[in-house]
Image 1 (cartoon, rainbow, N blue to C red):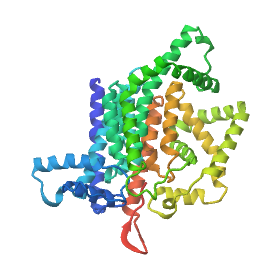
Image 2: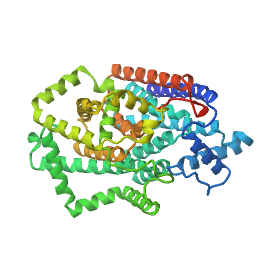
Image 3: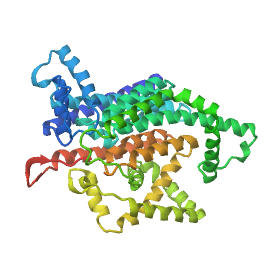
Image 4: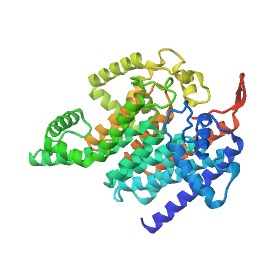
Length: 471
């Protein structure tokens, strides 16, 4: 890191942490009692704090990683500073754990940007600005101030991916296990780390094969259908070789071990969810991928919704009208047969998805079909920005994206945090203007979100407690 870049990084990190501390103080002043899912997480962490490790709230559906890390931080701090009584494992102290995770996430994002976007592809200022922007990504940033699993889950997943990029796969798998202890579905992104290793190996082998056969000049256009067919054929040929399979196993055995641990857990537990399973049933909810594309289109609009993108998309539709017509028919069918509406989505007016569904999807019964052209554009723009990535990396990413989103019956924006961050890390480094626009947009969204949460309270007729709207 050059000296000027180090100064910029230190200033950005210090400024972000100071601003977050001020927001943390304001939020905790207004909402001192546990709110929403904190009503389950805080008492469980406090029970662990008292040494009651056999006590478990059956309404909690995730593993105890958050509570174990919290005790591992709070207890030594309490001993060192001489804290005692109610301050130890208080709501504020537990929430502060996530503020510490946010600092770690900032640093990890910077290291990932440096690793993925080398000096020739991006300036130090661009990497720091990208880090600052993604560190205040509204979905993740809001839950920095509450005692939720998201900041810690993101921290260990990003850390695992960073170690994977540096070739330290045993450490990566171990960190992936930590992420799994925060949220079981993080196993998908641990497998993504291993899959990225396989993708790099396949990419190198494919390049070597093309050079050997002197086919470099006959390469299909990047991102084209012919490239995908050709790559898939090569993949089938590659994995039918025992030598190649052994090579891949030797490269990825830590991740394979983690997969074995996961399947053993599912077998012994009788499912992926611990605790209350009635509201977390898996299904084939294919429109979730459409919701994710729309979500990404909204939060990355400076990169995905540009005049050039729109013109290129229209040209693509005109050139490949038959393919887009087939895609539209398939999308309409998936929306028709596989749209599920979770009871929480319709009943809980304390989350933004409730209002999105009510104001948009419930406006008319045909609205969900009318949005298909938007989904297609969002999906095209999404994949177009990933064109520079090799075809095998894109295969791995999309398999993980589908695995992480489609089985979820509930439309919950928090489930999109990790796939979005992985996507945003890997797009070509945007121009300074786009980065500033994205940063301003995130700052505005965070200000509006926090204002609504703190000041637009309401009460339910059957409950005297103040209710607040959040992501």
